[in-house]
Length: 291
Image 1 (cartoon, helix red, strand yellow):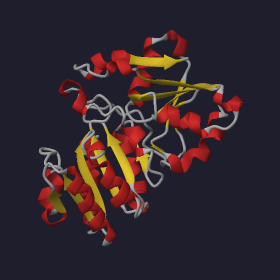
Image 2 (cartoon, rainbow, N blue to C red):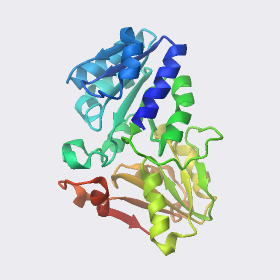
Image 3 (cartoon, rainbow, N blue to C red):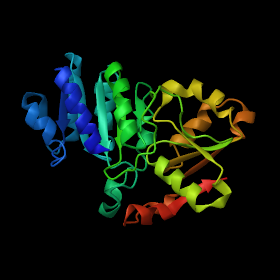
């Protein structure tokens, strides 16, 4: 996903000289296509994420479309105050790009496991959460990113993701995209798309389930969820995040009707994953389904 992101960013920067990329002293062997082509619009803020966020806010306030890029928790938790006060308070056009969402950096341990980031970012009512499930969705999300001038959180995995999405059609904020139809469905965001595919293949109970994705969500789109849930017999949300304050939690909070809530179940990472180190697949053994 990160390679697709840089590929698209270069294409769009060729057409729009307001686009700026700031990194936190990482991304090497990935960001060079941008840094080498647009050296005057590329900045390395060093290992100082707070400054990176404030730099982005200042540049965005002068009319630039700014992307800040770092691994997992670093552009989120380390600079939460600057996101809140500098970026969101002024509703600026900054896209916070987090690479290695979920357990993608499993072997690097808890410091690199982004499993509470949704909870932090959806606290800010100005932010839209962009969580693509495959490179095709990364590609499609750029139309939204380029047309929206408010703060955004783009949560990418790392590399090697399979493509499941249909190349045709667009992504709409707060709306679900169909991967496979069913009367009962898995509703995924981010790497939940891959997890849902595995659940269907590995459990006969889910063999007839459909899959839909929700790559753009957050506080702005609560009102759109209840009607979509009501179109199905069962909806099971799927995410590589803790249960509390995650995607499924947001869906539950979006529903007012108990009849709709009764159709909604969640799957998520169990808290027992905290403190464990290993491959992503090993860590996903701590995955739970409330159904």
